[in-house]
Image (cartoon, rainbow, N blue to C red; front, top):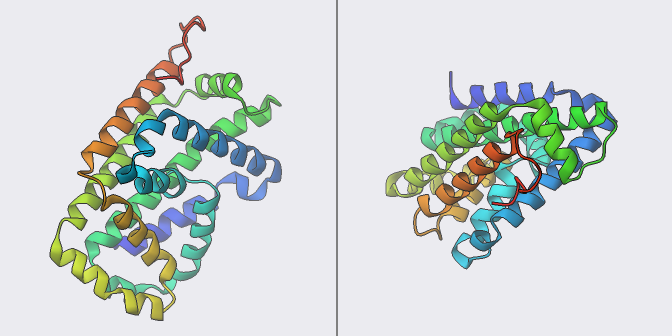
Length: 236
């Protein structure tokens, strides 16, 4: 299956998620994801505030994680992907495959947070640290979150490999005019923004490894039900 066919399949799955037809659930999901983005920024503030990591930090939180910006992108992708065969012929396959993996990872993150939102709605609870902890433990998807984090790490390494290839980078740049001409700008820009965010990094490992290390610790601590409350599981 081609990269764009895979992408279209992922978008169709995203559109079938229940919050698209449930305003209460959609609002709760927005609250959950807003809380998650704030938590990510707080957890990784020291790293994200460094000049060379700032762009990647924002791309990580706003584009690779999910949320309002991602939902807008999905709507744009849904419009262009069925007609984007020409872009598949022009843009390097590696770039399209990387973008597809990134979008899949963001959809997975959204679906995991959707399960938290459903639990909060069903229990009529607001979004705050204590209730999020309860939701995490009740939904109990630690393994799925580890897998999603691993997929996100893979996206970063795939992108790093791509931008370090002069031939692939040049081919991608040459595809820009055609992509814009045929209104494939959202998909092209999604990829281009990711490449631009990673370019200032000394190396991708210096960003994604400490991020994943902390996030894995949080996943472990959040799901340790024997925690007596003396340790904040989100503070690592």
